[in-house]
Image (tube, rainbow, N blue to C red):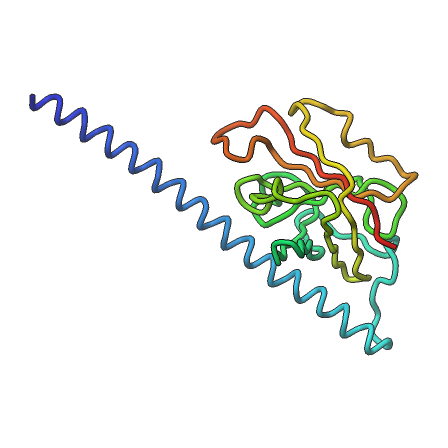
Length: 199
């Protein structure tokens, strides 16, 4: 009887440790995302200030915009949720802890080509599956604001390499995240959202 109580207590302690660690990780990621969002808001505010004061130097087109990996580059707004998410250059774990990652080598708004943004399904893209065709995104960068409208979504295998083509012919915003949204652990699929510029 006593041995059974010790084993039960051990299971409870191990379970509590896992839960505690998970909560700590979530809290840490939330803090990093909030800090990145503050930086992103400052960048886009600077954009507005610079437009009002043309004497200040600022990037005016995508070619002038060359962020380094890990830099906060702008804000992804999702009007349906009244959400503002920081965009960070790069999609490695360090960058995705701060917010939405911009896939290296993909285009930026205002350029021809695929703009690829990725994020975790359990943080920044938690509600991505609730969006519908016709919903909009606004990408705010130091050189301007760009609106996109969802025209398609799909679910693909996690190893599907046909989604990110890095084509340079048509401007298109693609958001990617792991799927299913409610699954804990490694996800077998990816959820893809396609959006086109609103002119």
